[in-house]
Length: 299
Image (cartoon, rainbow, N blue to C red; front, side, top):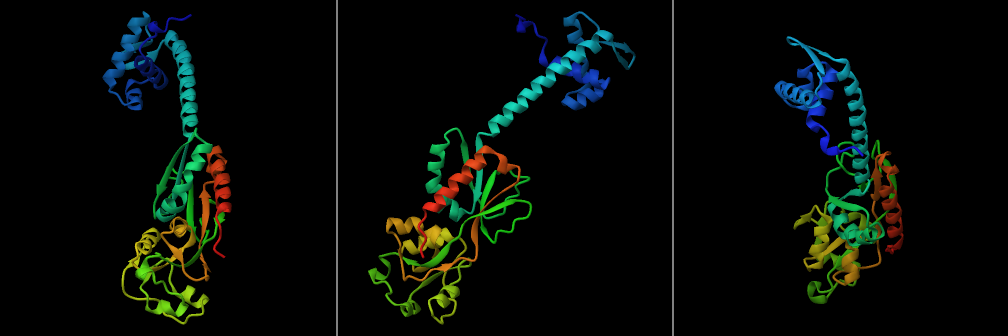
């Protein structure tokens, strides 16, 4: 068995291989980010250790010796095999990670409470859940798969609709001292919490009410904050089913009336064509579809 303790220093071997390939110490130094002097020193130290000249020096000109050429060929093959093995190991490590991105409201209120079940099924995966309001650039950011809420047009990506949604009024059971509106027209005198994403007018029309969009008061840009404000008794919110589901199940919120309006947007699973081939992305897609099927729809 070869005694690896007698192996020359790896830095010297790498310096020599680069110098042999370029036939130039300066270009070798640029490649491995050291100085010309460092390359020269490492090559000379290697020659002294091996007891053989690897380069013939004629002033500033270099010429690799036959022994140097033969050694460089063997070294290049060995270093190439090390590089291939390192790349394969790095790729294997990346296969154990799954990075998901979603809107903060959906990530916090729908996905996060359920993602533990996916991790239990796939304990070998490191799952990273990111929440962001901006559209991720999958070609530049280290994200495997996203869940977007919108119209479903995302050029260059694989797009699959996974869930629609509905919105309807909700309120805390303690709102107004527990005296919740029992008729549709009673909404006219109630504080209606608003969001830019879910205007009230479409729901008013579906309920047969000729009301205008509420004005004044606080307007929420985040659906999760809208739901929490309603749960804390600050008014009646027009909430998306997927976002309010946890509070409805816990009793922090109750649904008012039986009118629910479909959202014009839906939830889509999106990723690059290449990411779709990853086992962890396929596993997440299958799990997500199963979880969506368990959700009771409001209609």
